Length: 322
Ligand SMILES: NC(=O)c1ccc[n+]([C@@H]2O[C@H](COP(=O)([O-])OP(=O)(O)OC[C@H]3O[C@@H](n4cnc5c(N)ncnc54)[C@H](O)[C@@H]3O)[C@@H](O)[C@H]2O)c1
Image (cartoon, rainbow, N blue to C red):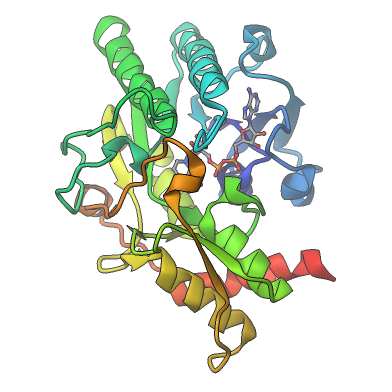
C-alpha cells in the first residue's frame, strides 16, 4: 500500500515509517520539523520506497501532487498545559480539515491519532471507547488539547456520515520509546530519564499520586499497522494502550526510572512541585484504558512490559549524553 504519514519525523511517525517500509509498503512522509527531527528518519532517508516532504500541513497546498491509499494523520500540537492553547485549537483544526478534504478528493482512508486525554476527568476506570468524555471548564487551558482531538473525532465521523469518509480513530495512551522527544513534549518518562542520567532532582507535579499507563512504541506501532492493513478497523475507534494492570503512579515511575539508571540501592531525588505553581491547571488523577476492543478485533496483545521498554528507551536516550 501507499501510505502518507503526517508528522513523520516525530516520535510515533518515524517508528511507524520504519516498520511500514520493512513490511514492503511505500511511505510518503510530511513534517515541518516543528517538533520532529531529521535524525529520526535518517535510517530510511535513502530507502527507495520513502519520500520526505518538508512543509506545514496547515497549508493545503503542501498536499498537492501526493496521493495515498491511507493517510495516517499524526501531526499535532500537543501539550497546552500552561500555554499554547490557541495554536493547538487553530493548527489541529486547520491540519485536519486539509487532510479530510484530501482524503475525500482522493478516496483515501484517514487514520487519526487521538488521545487518552479525551476521557478527561471521567472517574470510571478503565475507559472503553464508549466511555463519557468528561472535560473541565473552558477557562482551564489544559483541556484545549483534548477538545481539539474530540472536535477532530466528531469532524471525521460527521464526514463519514455525510460523505462516506473511511476512517479509523486510535486513542493513544502514553507511548514512549526510541525517538521520543527529550523534553516534556515527549511525556514525563523523557524528562525523568534526562534528570536521572544527569543525577539531578526529578520534578514531580503535585504529590505524584496521579496514575498513567505507558505503552512501548513497538506496541503502539503494531496496533497502528493492524489498523492500516486490516479492514476490520474501518470506521472504528480503538483505545491503543498497554497490557492489563500496567497502571503506575507518576511518583513510582520516577523512582523506577531513577533506579534503572542509577542502581536499585540509589535513593531518587524527587522535587514535588505543587499544581498551584502552574496557575489555573487541572490534572487527571487516573488514566487506564480498556483495550479489549483492539485485542479482540485483531487477536492482538501488547507484548512489552514497562521495565523492559524503559531499559531499551534509556539505552537509546543515553547516546545524547556522551
Ligand atoms: N506520544 C504519545 O504518547 C501520544 C499520546 C496520545 C496521542 N498522541 C498523538 O499521536 C500523534 C503523534 O504523537 P507523537 O508523540 O509522535 O508527537 P511528535 O510531536 O513527536 O510528532 C508529531 C510531528 O508532527 C509534526 N508537526 C506538527 N505540526 C505540524 C504541521 N503544522 N505541519 C507539519 N508537521 C507538523 C511535528 O514536527 C512532529 O514531528 C499526535 O497526534 C499526538 O497528539 C501521542
